[in-house]
Length: 512
Image (cartoon, rainbow, N blue to C red; front, side, top):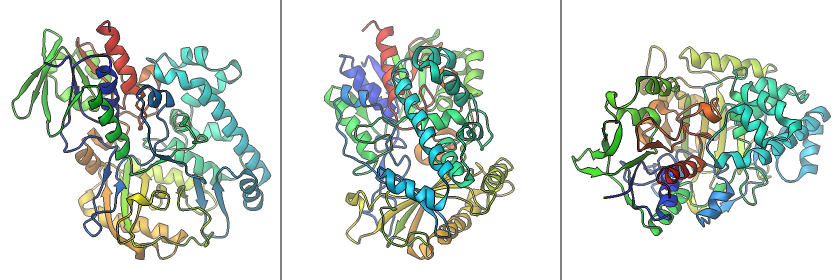
């Protein structure tokens, strides 16, 4: 009989398992899929290129605290992306963001303005200072926003920190005096909108912007990194650590229900009918799926309502691509390292922010936007271990702002057409891209739900507009039942801090 059952072998569940097992607890992890990892895995989805690897869900590692890596003695093969951002246009302008500041300054001054360069430097310096101050708070149970500011943030930044977490991307970016709306749009798209049901003026999107600037990985320089072998390397490494400390990890073991008696956890029942007893159950599943595993009478009504109020629609589309070659960008035909970074495709009209506002409005109305928020990336140029013998490249479009279901239609009817439309947008920046596509593997919000088991297809479980004590609690009113998933503090993404913190809460409750 295990001391602790963990439901779900996503990265947070595996962190929890490893930390509890190394403290001597008998831990069993139950995963319904064939492999561990949840949405953090390397897959081979292309029939025409069955040995081409791709991180189908999460695709970069940025936010995992180095303290967790050290505590677990976890060594990951990280590859820095330098440059890390590429902002192309359909004319001759471009920006490559990397460690070569002199070259980056030249591009800003030639293609944009000195005011944009100064704003870029000032904003990133402020975010770096907030990142350093906030880091310890990510590895402890949360305080309120105000208490967090008081305890962790240097006095000169407290007001700006609170305004950022509560405010919109618009409010924050306007503080620094950017002249180019294209540059402001780039920062909003990559940091504020990722995985979020929010637009440029949505309160709380600033919280997501801050979260995405919390990268402290060794050697990263504050930029997100590629993991050799894809994101499955992360969760497979965590699995090995957990097993080394004695955790039992069972795949193809879907949980049908969590058993309780008189408000106390008693264990779980698998879909096979097998019953496993334990006095502690930690759920790495999203909170809405977890509630579905409990009898309605087992959870107080007010707690259930609080959790259900956190639900938000998934508005993310991931189009994984198999390519027979790399495209050529109009603005930068020669290879200057532009295939390693996150590539930001933005409307080329003068009112780019207005165009993004219309795209978000389309999504809220159930329409498929003509030009949504798009990040484009390639990993095989930096990690050739993922390529197959035929030399195919992997690539993907990470698209924000699609409806969970198109109004008056369905994704089954619209997917193929819309994927082709998105590729035609790529053709505007790199003509001929569509001709390089051998095969696609698209994950619409409903398919994210079915493929990864995430309710509503929301990749962060709970919107990152919610921060600190407004997120999912680790403890529940059911004695012995805990959450450790992405909906908990500090945020949704591949972080592991929620798993780390949940393990600490369990150990404290068990007086271990």
